Length: 196
Image 1: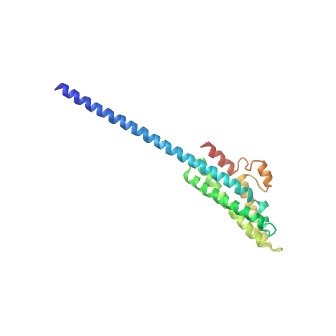
Image 2: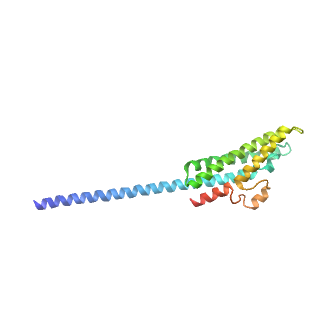
Image 3: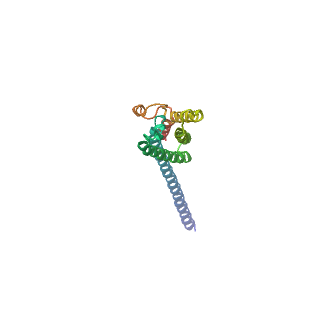
């Protein structure tokens, strides 16, 4: 009888040991799967942030105070229109990517700077559109339209300064200095992307 009980106890210990090892392995596999999902998510967030950053740099490079008046001037409209359309498309691409980054996170800092940049790009697009609109309607001697244009021109300049660090600069100077200055939203976005 003792041998039977010992045999049964051995079987129970063996089964319990097998169940314990299986449970430990399942937990380890689940942890590895969670880690892999987290890494994929971080890679996706990082890729979206990079795409948003690059698209924003391209858009802001053209959507400047230097180009807003000439973009509606009949003398330059044919040449500038495709460049403006491409810049607006890049701006929308940047906003979509950064909106997703803000929603997905990655880090608190990255989510915050992505949201700030997203919002600043909205202001930039609105100021560009309104400045063009008021410039089209600009008539000599019309103080209201001139004042409205000046206000949107200033908004455009401030939005660009917040986004890339440059205000009223020539595009060639911006390119020579790396297109974004330290402290700007795009600089902060790049740093937050690198750090995740």
